Length: 186
Image: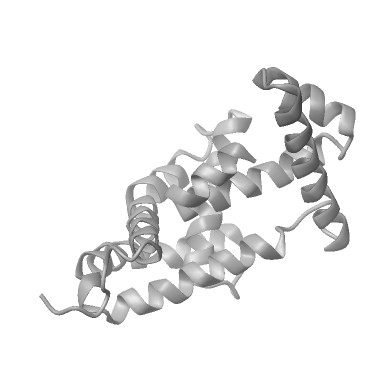
């Protein structure tokens, strides 16, 4: 909860990836309150009230996964709406005067989209969702220890896709905080 709150304020992409990771971790822990406490809460060394808040938050996430029938796979509607928001913002940046650098980064990444789409096996997703899923796949490969086997995929994602998402997330935060005017001409 505390990490998620900070990530949400600072970087929308990291926030989404963090929540996706939590979804998978909660599944791995089989939604067991005892396992959640032992694995995710107790090691943090929090005060009792903070532990209770954190357990309640994890319980809420588990409840959402149950209600949305995503106990085995899939991502919460909340995070998918955020990915959709990011994509809509991407579309704005593709037209906005302030998005010149973003468009350059995206143009460099565009040739990688078709191979990534083939690797991830979903033709119906937006480029923003595709990029986020690719970043998450890299994270999972690294966590599983099979990063070497997928080195080409990982290099493509990190060298080409990661800068696009980083720039998009940076602009997104600036726009949320009123620090940038997308349509101001320079």
